[in-house]
Amino acid sequence: MGVRCQELYADLAHLLGGAKAGVMISVIIPTYNEETALPETLRHLLQQPGDYEVIVVDGGSTDRTGAVLNHFGFEFAPILIAPDASHFTHHA
Image 1 (cartoon, rainbow, N blue to C red):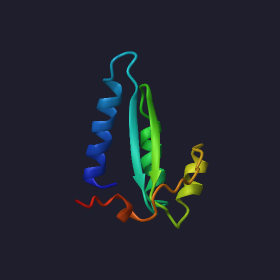
Image 2: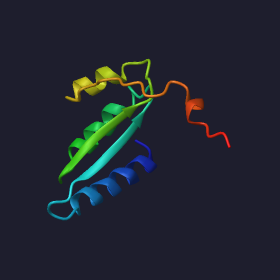
Image 3: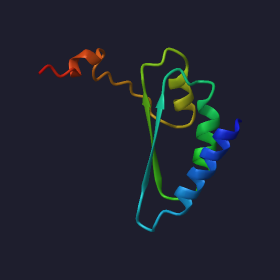
């Protein structure tokens, strides 16, 4: 695990542990072909205390990212909202 990852995990632990009672934190994890990195990330995250939810947003992975999510108990339901970003281009 790199130094930057350790810093991020420490920041996350501080944030989750310091949340006020009755406040839930949403942790959003963007993924794209993250089957290698995702297990360590989820293991560290799910060990943290506090009231939080984990939302994983996948960008159309073609590897086993979905299987990793299933292994950790996440329901993997791919939803395609806009396959072509040009739909959001504003023309003046």
